[in-house]
Length: 342
Ligand code: NAI
Image 1 (tube, rainbow, N blue to C red):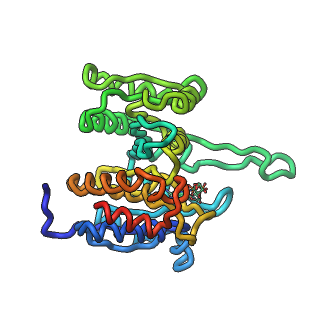
Image 2: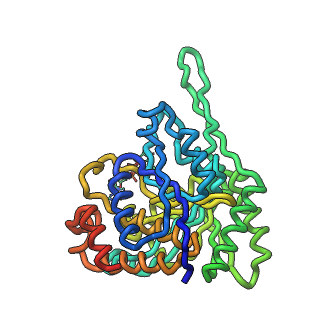
Image 3: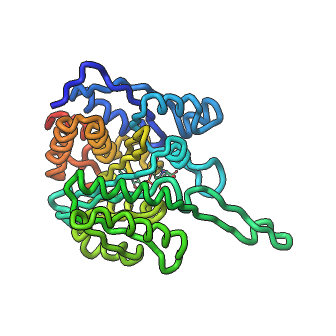
């Protein structure tokens, strides 16, 4: 077991909506575990707008560049108009190019009990670059809308190598590359071509298969246990990881890591859930599982395993689950139940 005499500096962003509630729950549990993190709290999102007008203050970014590690609650992004997604800006600014989203069956009475898939999403390109505009025609200034997607061979190679190395490191056998190269022939065609090229170096160790995204979406619903690692582009990854969350029981159970060469940020897959914010009913499991991934990242896998074990034990029976999973526990009581099982 790794022992830390010095605490590990870690940026903490509570986030919007249910963010502060689930972050509080996670901090209670991590405190109970004596997790060796030195929290450096920063603001982002709606709170940061209220304080200084910018949803991603330079001080927050500078702090993350210094600690190189962050635990983050969800951040609200207005639909349609308004500021650009802080999440996307963070991933770009820190070059957190790999989004790792595991989907594991944790509920024994769930719809599927044998799902163990890791979705790896290219996190910096595709349609998320935010290059879009309206073209006016006549007196309609918004007669046509146009969006561009960007992917470079370099970035495709980077994420492909990450996925295959991840497969080797975690003893996974197969990478399924998911694309839409029949329609987006260049944008996702380059992705497919590059991943296929990179896979040659792993032949005999990690198998490569390919799926068109629509087929993958259907196969996930029919037989999710056929997938091991799914490697895909930014938008497909966003959509399919919510689908995987639904398959394993809901967004309350799906964690994610955003990994780059110089920094890593851990969060839930879900958003700020404004519909249930402030009610102490949100499920903190996704953020807790993200914290477990952060332990692994910091070479503290013993602590990660201890946390995952306590969560799994707590989720065994409906009586110790939150409402989204058919239970009655509040966010805070769920946290206490996890602490009891640590
Ligand atoms: P959402 O993921 O916040 O919520 C979708 C549904 O799942 C809601 O009914 C919500 O109550 C439920 N839900 C989500 N997390 C839950 C939890 N922990 N426990 C119990 N129920 C939970 O998606 P939505 O409503 O589309 O987005 C809300 C905001 O979050 C938007 O502004 C969006 O841009 C932002 N967002 C932020 C993300 C991030 O910070 N990484 C990721 C996804 C969305």
